[in-house]
Every structure is written in C-alpha cells, then in structure tokens.
Length: 123
Length: 110
Image (cartoon, rainbow over all chains, first blue to last red; front, side, top):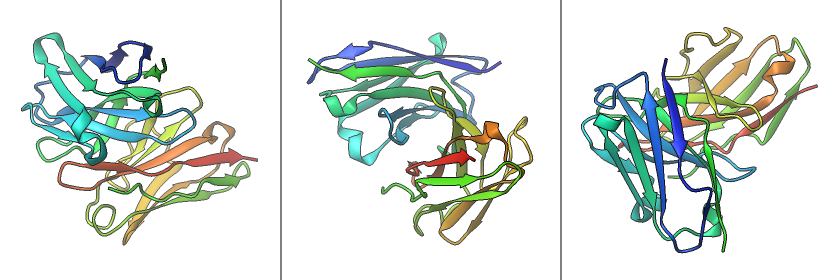
C-alpha cells in the first residue's frame, strides 16, 4: 500500500524559510521508475507543480520558483524534503507531495498523493 | 511555462456526458502524449483519473475517458453521476523535466 504524508510547520513568518518533509511507504525512493514531486495549491486556486526528485537524485524545479526551492531525499528514511526560502503571504497554500511516474526522463504524472499540509505565511 | 487553459466551469445533468478541454501549446500538450487528469473533491487531495492522454488507472470508472487533438486534450465523463461533481485539473509534460497544470474546471452536476 503506497502512502505519502507531509509534515512541517502550519505557520511561518514572512522572509522565513519553510521546510517540509514527505514520508513515504509502500515504495522505495530508489525505484528507477518513480520519483517524488511537490505540488501546492493556494486556497481556492489551482494546482502548481514545484519540484521533482528522481531516484538517481537528479532534480528539476519550476522555472518561476527555482531560485527559492531545494528538494532532497534520504532514501534510508524514505523521506523527501522541500525547502522554500524567503516565504511571503502569497505562498500560503496547501502543499502536497506525490509519487511521480516517469523514470529518468520524467516527471510525467502523479499516481499517489499525500493528504496535503496547509502552510500559512503571516506575521 | 504558462498554465494550460481550461474552462472555469462546466455542468451537466445526471446521465449526460460532458467534456472538459485543456488547451496548451506545441511545447507541451502538442508535443507529448503525457497529459494527465486529476479529480479533486473539496478538502481532499487530487486523484489521478487519466494518464498518458487516455489510460485509466486501476479502479477508475470507464465512464472517464481522455483524448487529444493537436494542442488540446479533453476529458469526457459519460453517464454523469452526482459523485462526479468536483474540480478537475489537467497536467502536461512540458519537457525537459517540467510539468504544467491547467487552471482547473469546476464540474457541477445539476
């Protein structure tokens, strides 16, 4: 049974750095055909893909947010971590992690999602 | 990377069929057979309904189907049911190693 669960702060202050952790089970982060992505959704708005990490540790980022994002993984702990610097109120959103199909040339699509975690940016 | 274009809302009566369009460009939808569709009920995480334009994951009703023509992908739901009322998002590979979502479509079952 594949599961993903996001964890992290519910409230961050403007200019702070957000660190979110995605803990996975039911699959290995070393699986060559799978990776993990982070996606966010501001309240009442659309989904936005943020970043992806492949099984070989290569990374890809949204062009618009690339300068603020870092994705990493600890395969032994089955965890993927996303950091986003210089948080702003417009970054208030539900942040999801998702298992992502695509092997080494993806990411292609998200077949399992975490429940999401709402992060509010406010002083 | 511009968002894919979806209608803000569509509606249909139970039993009818509806189609949601997803328009991109020759750099994303038009270049790759890697369009996926997600259903999202209020307060819930998205759920994969269609991948690689027209493939259905195990457990997804065959009332859901996908297609693509040129730069536009489509999701069709036949035999509309009350439980289909949700937001729907398309997503396309936009290479290299990028994905882009649509703006979402709210489906109302009348």
